[in-house]
Amino acid sequence: MSTSIYKGYSLRNRVFFGFLLVCLLSVVASSLVPYFVLRENSVQTSRTDMQEKTGAVMRYLDYAVSRTRVETRDLKPVLSNKIYEIADINQHDIILYDLHGNYLLSNKEEQLVKQKKVPLDIINKVLSTGTRYDIKGYDASKDAVLTSSYLLLKNNDLEPIAIVYIPLYHDESAYFDVLNVYVKYIVIVDIVLILFSVWLSWVMSNSLAKNITKFSDMITRITLFENEMRPIRYYKNDELNALARAYNRMILQIQDQKERLRFKASEEAWREMAKQVAHEVKNPLTPMKLTIQNFERKFNPEDPNVREKVKQMSKTMVDQIDVIATVASAFSEFAKLPEKNNEVINLNGEIEDILRVFTDDSIFVHANKSNIMITMDKVYLSRIITNLVTNARQAESEERKMIINVDIEQYQRRVVISVQDNGIGIPENIHERIFEPNFTSKNSGMGLGLSMVRKMVEDYKGEITVKSEVGKGSTFTITLPTNL
Figure (cartoon, rainbow, N blue to C red):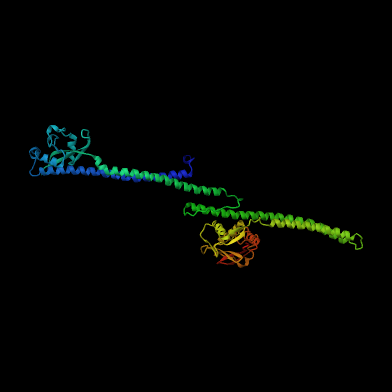
């Protein structure tokens, strides 16, 4: 089910819509919570205001009936004039009913009072609770919200003597002014935030998709037959950095494996060539041997044709020697490395580019000059440096953090490249053997890396040496002519 949902949607779109959804939910949540808080505050303010108004009216009425002990029948003579004053002060109509809900008096003319009797259910609620009872409605004639408040009036002995009805006309929109202002501004802010979220989501999803596509394209191009596999240069400290580091380690391993495969194929070819050379050399040696033996057996100094026979034997020997020379030349041609493509290069920049494959921070490059130029094949240089640094990393000691120093120095017409590590070191008794083909001190490997390095260095009329101390580290030093 989940597969069908995402089918047809690219990773970029999923990231875009996912991030956008989170942003929209955040915007909505941050807008609705204050909205409901302000709305509740407005409602509470309205209730408090209404309570204060009815409370003020009741205080005036309580004061008016508190001078003497008043019964229900005494309310008309006691409040007949006072009720007008109380209504004027509080700006509200006041209507009094007896405890049975019958009309008693009001600040209005009796014929103007619409409600002559209070409903029984309201009387029961007011008498049973002793608190204010409100009924909210709407007066179409005045186009206003009407809240009918019923309260219980008591005398000095706290005995109920009347039911007070106060009609409160009020415009609730006044209490929502702050809320309306907030809503107006929050809508504008929300629109800006949503537009910003859309832009930010698109930029981030595009950036992520672009980097992943770049990695994918570079990984897709990897083959064992590709001459150059470039490392990914990604310097941001995020999850994609781990992917870039893994890719760079992978191409390093692939390059190393390519070398191993190449030398393995070369070794097989050498074996076949050795068999062929032995066969080709053996073929002319046999007739040469028979020719000499036959000549020695039949040699007669007095034979008039002796000169002709010596000449014929010499020709046979020379022809067979030429065959052997041809075989030797063919074998020599086979032993040569691929043809070099020499060009003038900046040694500092090329070595720094090569070392970018190694994404760790334990490799340091030093040079005594900013631009050291040399004529050399870039592929040869890459193989030399990659092999030496790889060997240095594989010699890491468990007792300390690996540090590799690559020094580039120029002294007059000589260039010196040294790769120094603080690894486990090389025993002195195998210093001379480490450059031999098929010799290795590691548990795995073919032992061809350093022999290939020496062959390529020697092709440029250079030399490579090693100094090492067990437990302290090793230094491989390459000396080359600048050849410019």
